[in-house]
Picture 1 (cartoon, rainbow, N blue to C red):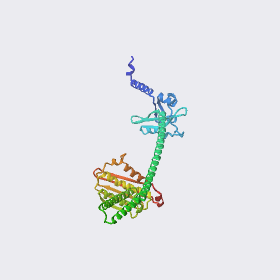
Picture 2 (picture 1 turned 180 degrees about the vertical axis):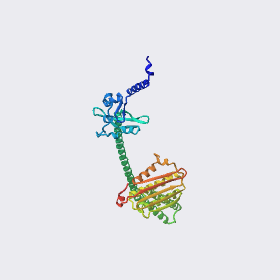
Picture 3 (picture 1 turned 90 degrees about the vertical axis):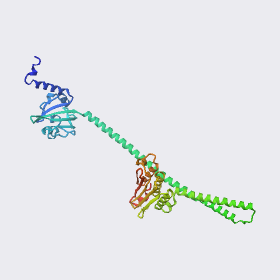
Picture 4 (picture 1 turned 135 degrees about the vertical axis):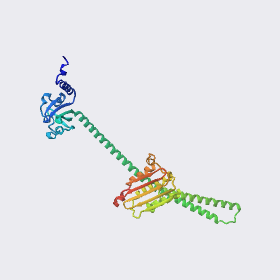
Amino acid sequence: MRGNPVHLPGAGQIIWRDRLSQLLESTGEGIFGIDMDGCCTFINRAGAEQLGFAPDEVLGRNMHELAHHSHADGAHYPEHLCPIFNAFRMALPCRIDTELFWRRDGTSFAVEYSSYPIVEDGIVQGAVVTFVDISARRRAEEALRQAHAVLEQRVSERTQALSEALQQLRELSAYTHTVREEERTRIAREVHDELGSLLVALKMDVGWLDKRLSEQPQREPDDAQAMRDRMRGKCQNMGRLIEAAVDNVGRIITDLRPSILDHQGLWAALEWQAHEFVQSAELALDWQMDVAHAAPLPEASAIAIFRIFQEMLSNIGRHAEASAVAIAIRATADAISITVKDNGKGAEPSAFEAANAYGVMGMRERARHLGGSLAISSEVGRGATFHLRIELPADPVTRATNTP
């Protein structure tokens, strides 16, 4: 009868072994078993073929000596260091993907293998090892690493190029600031020397004419006297217009290049600018300055600091709607610190990072050229604080030549 073998003693084991054998032969992974001496007790066809053998040629042979005997550099791989053997001897599984198996022809391939102990009645009898050739995966990983390295190199080159372009842009910006200051200085001097002198001379002539008209005898016809009075009125009106023009010329000169910056230095210029600003904007001023131990600064650095300070105050005047401002300036041989705080409406911090916050960008760029930084803190309804800090070089010679 066809079904009789299933019911005979041991038939279940025969069927199970047949099914297990079919399962082992159907998988593409290599699978073999070893006893406590490391000798092969079974191996499937896929495993034997990957090693370059027929299954019968592998049975009974020490698997470490057959396929795991050397490192990638050819150095001997001692059996007592083999993770496969150590794993089952300690009844612990292992999974390794960093080693090689060797073929019959002496070539090797990258392998990922797992070793699981075979335990019967609490006693380890050996191990089952599964392995797969991962050479293609390793090549793909290596290609990926190389592509990543190339990409990193390109990114590094682009970053370097962008950094150099940014540095050139900053140098151009610094040069532009320098040219602008030189042009302001030239215009201020020309306005002062040429237009200012002409207006003063014209005022003196008008004053002389007014004086001469007033010295004429009073005994003249009424119409002549009336004409003279009208002429004097014209002269006096011209004098007032000339005085206003002289004042405007002085204001323009000051805006272009405050003479106090040249004659009395940075600290006096900052104090003058602060008091001029609060007087014009009708703000209360809390003023603190400690520059007794300040180091001398090159002209370009002093101008840059003055312009940053001007922009801080200008920002308050344009946006803050403040009633008071506190200014603290401290300078030593090592650093300069300027803090300007208002009690105005404030703003979100993002407002000072906006793409159209040109004033803030200009201040930060000037500060960066000086080797310093500009920090801004603000909160809606609680005003804003601008803090400029510039570290000075220790060497006076370096400081004198360290111009933006």
